[in-house]
Amino acid sequence: MIPLALLPGSAQWGAHLDELLARPEALWICGAPGCGATSLAAELAARRGVNWLDAASTEEALAWLAGHPKGIVAVHQPAPPALPCLALRLPSVEEHPEALPGLLAHLAREEGLLPPVPPALAALPCPGNLRELRNRVLRWKLLGQLPASDAAGPPRFEAEDLATNLHELERFLLHRALRRAYGNRVEAARRLGVSRRQVYLLIGRHGDPVRGEAASGALPRRVLKRRTVQNSSPDPNTR
Image (cartoon, rainbow, N blue to C red; front, side, top):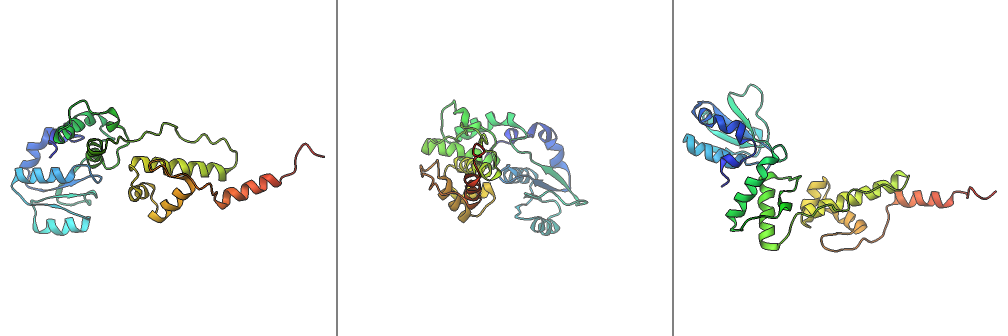
């Protein structure tokens, strides 16, 4: 378990931890998935000597608190207004990047890795927060994989027409998602906010840089249509 003092934002709420534990109200701990809310709830419940719940929704948390007025819940959603409990939101590592070195050093020690850890493991953004950091350490330990950087940078948009530029942007975003997901296409689909079927269609069009799959070269109709119009335009030098 990650020590509470290493969690992002602990310098703020950690200074009042004893006072927080002494309060009689229920405690609502929220934050993005993987932020450490579950670990914090378990630790505080043990110190307080009360029950706790890792709730999947606000409704589940409210129903449980009705029977445990001094309990502690961990839930992704913020506490509803006027709820008779204390609410603590855990910030992300993006909000407190200064927490990254300590977190990585601790996770590396847990896995038996000798320092120093590769700086790329602390690269931001880090969706998934602590969960993603742990996955990065494990992938480095077991597979020697580091988070891939987008060395080429975003597309330069050399073309003038929107269709071609959108095609280039689509390729860039797909390849970035695949690299950040270490080639996991289900995770890449989640990052892009599209279905897995759509990701496979995009990979067929743009290729997969992680698995070394080449692009088919097929262009979407919007690009083909634009190029047909361009090719059929009269030559301005002819009269």
